[in-house]
Length: 308
Image (cartoon, rainbow, N blue to C red):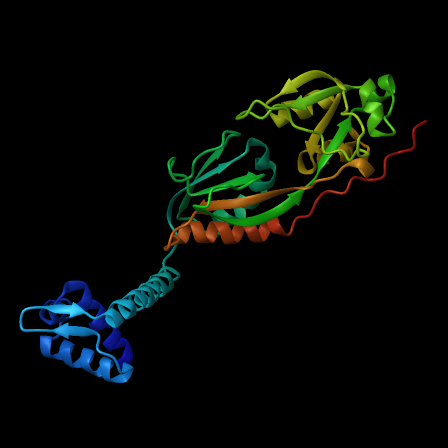
């Protein structure tokens, strides 16, 4: 404790440029500050200040030591603030941004979260637009894909698979593709990314050097719900995330195609702005949602019935 008091006295004196000012800020006498610094110098075996009747100036050793001590005391302050915040009840408005399709994953876990943290008001924005968390004042976002922004912290949620699906009525009319190359004779329902305008690539593994697949695009959608609806109605073959396709697959409204040729699973992540002090409402939301959703695994489609 004496050493910590000495470090505090030294840093405050270096910051303010005098023992008098340091003592005033710490509620001590200038003499007490001077004695604490002198004791610290004796322990270290170096002189930290050049003293005169008019000035107090750091030595070269003192300057280097001050930088390290400032960092240590900042970390200690952070630890004390974080410990105090663990005793606070998380409260207030929490702004969450997530892609539209992710509500199938997020909404089922929210009743338990709201029951545990009734003082938190959730402001949910389900939108495929990529927001800037810091500029737009968003507390937490759910995103997939690359994460280029170094200002953000991230935690992995559940992985997901993209599945090629078609309605039985469509397959009865057009036949069931047995290899990726067969897709050249089929109709495609394609997803268009709202931000870039690019069409989603189907994650099919092809033989090296094999020409690009060219199914005929019959419908494009910038909304996965609409794409699922068009696929269920037999307009063509659609590429859907497993959690969105689960129910129609289980009821038989859709069948999966070419499962053995599909690759590249996706990954959802929770993102939040990096800062030294994580607010209680963000901390409990990140911990709760990641615990509930990380345990979920990719959907494995059942064996397709034999064509007949």
